[in-house]
Length: 181
Image (cartoon, rainbow, N blue to C red):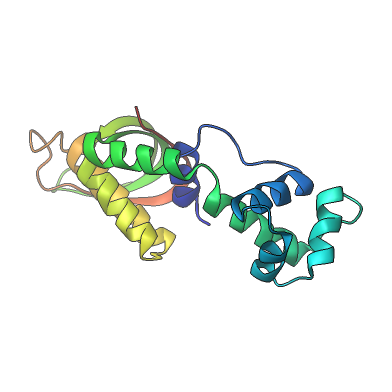
């Protein structure tokens, strides 16, 4: 999972996922309507192993722990996630980013990459494009291209009021946060 995927994930959550294995397995059992057998089939382990995880008497192997975490992330707060996504696609979101941006511009200006800390509101069309890319399994570089294009238009070019020939790209992403109101 890339930095942008994690940012989208953090924006969609009001509470973090459970930290302990028994709490995560309890959540999975609850979503499976109380069936440890269904959770076992989903994770590819025995029903007894799921029961032991619930009690905390054994710990899952790293591969099983990763599968548990993925399933919990996929099913944690589905209505909240849908509401936040809908709001982001309608109203846009606030992007806080620290990255090194590369430029190409008209003659006489510099094209040296610069590290910037930017806070910018981006419209719902950008959110729709980011979510569509994430749903299609796009790589981190494709998502960075989408964000760079949006920042190019809304931050660097100020929606067409300046720097009309400038193009920007993200060379090195430090961190980012997405905020949906």
